[in-house]
Length: 57
Image 1 (tube, one colour):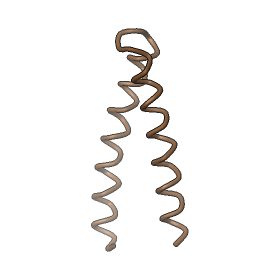
Image 2 (cartoon, rainbow, N blue to C red):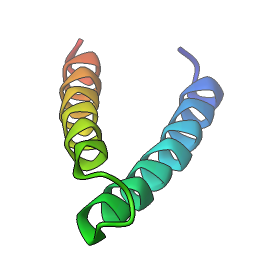
Image 3 (cartoon, rainbow, N blue to C red):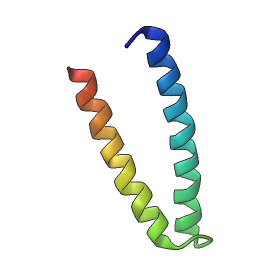
Image 4 (cartoon, one colour):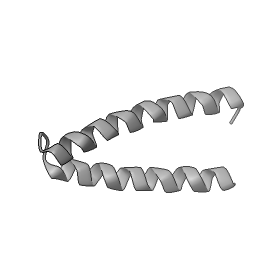
């Protein structure tokens, strides 16, 4: 993956993570069902491990 493609991918991931953080917050506050926050948490943990192991290769 070239440096430009890597930057583009991380920018897209940043937008996704920000949207998920907003959904998580709305779930904790009670505007959305709390299950949304649980799903977001699991997704963020999986995303963290995928990105971490991908960088090590």
